[in-house]
Length: 143
Picture 1 (cartoon, helix red, strand yellow):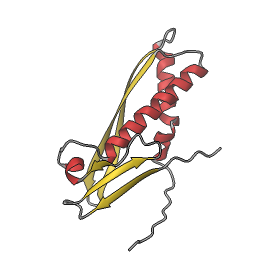
Picture 2 (spheres, one colour):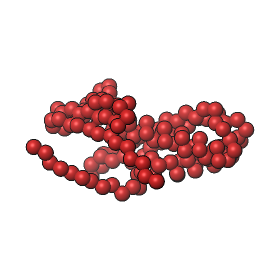
Picture 3 (spheres, one colour):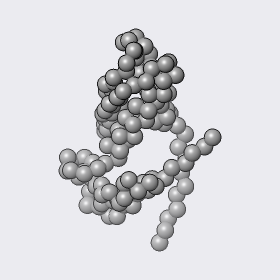
Picture 4 (cartoon, rainbow, N blue to C red):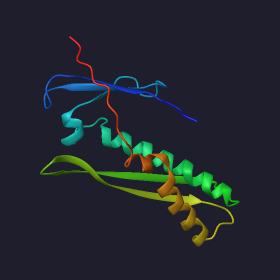
């Protein structure tokens, strides 16, 4: 089974003085602005790392719910925060770490069962696995 979802971005101008917009196929994000200042200088607004964090937190929470369900538990609530670390080194910028923090209410589950499910979800959620994915590119220059 293959499911494809689209996200798109438009950038205009130079790195520091330019600006861009990001949109999603569903329309949840529709030309949301982003810029150098929003990404690196603390200006309010969205940025790629924030979007990756939201994607990872939501994917992880769903994966944890699935794994708990397979073990016979139905979670009442799973709240996850993903903190994405962007670091600069000699080769440029990279995401070197993502810290997941999750809190859950799961009737009947003990700490050992929860930790087992939480670790399986961390390893198996598709966004966690993304960071080892092959990346392909279709680049076209338009006039």
